[in-house]
Amino acid sequence: MSERVNIKKVEVLSDNWYVLKKTTFNYLRNNGTWQTQSRETYDRGNGATILLYNMAQKTVILTRQFRFPAYMNGLADGLLIETAAGLLDEASPEERIKAEAEEETGYRINKVKQIFEAYMSPGSVTEKLYFFIAEYEPEHKGKGGGIEAEGEDIEVLELPFAKTLEMIKTGEIRDAKTIMLLQYAALNLFPNTANGK
Image (cartoon, rainbow, N blue to C red):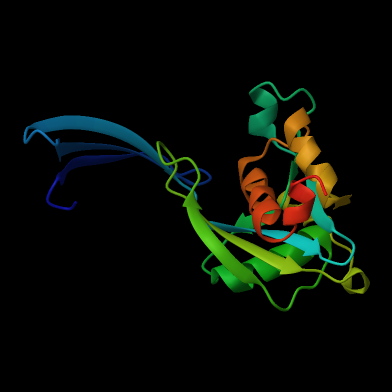
């Protein structure tokens, strides 16, 4: 692909929080002609997310927190139900997600399993997200709630897995990474629940 992309100009539009760039490049199309294109990319680093589940109870741990961009795009109260997640901040995906799970949910997790990676909004955001699952034990719960200095004010939810599938249908859960992890769980962790059994 490097032979098909010829970068001509890169402009930094903002680096106030993360980095927003405008790049002009020539792209070699499938028909053999070159086309000049311009794209804006937002680089906020890569991240990780995790679904905590308890097989015996058939429950999962999710969070609820205010998301300003979702609020600005029509989510009335701005509150999204999500899986625990965070940016890597130069840590490995595995060590970062263990720390993030404890910070947000309070659950200390020793063993996690990475199940896949995905680009969440590749038309404009460079972020790649690493997806994990881990079984939690109720007795390993600490404080959670996020880090106040980072503006986090997180409510921890322990929900029956079957209920979360209904919440996707009703629109109570509409966060993409969370839906992806719950669908994975429906296929691989709780297949009888997904079939209505």
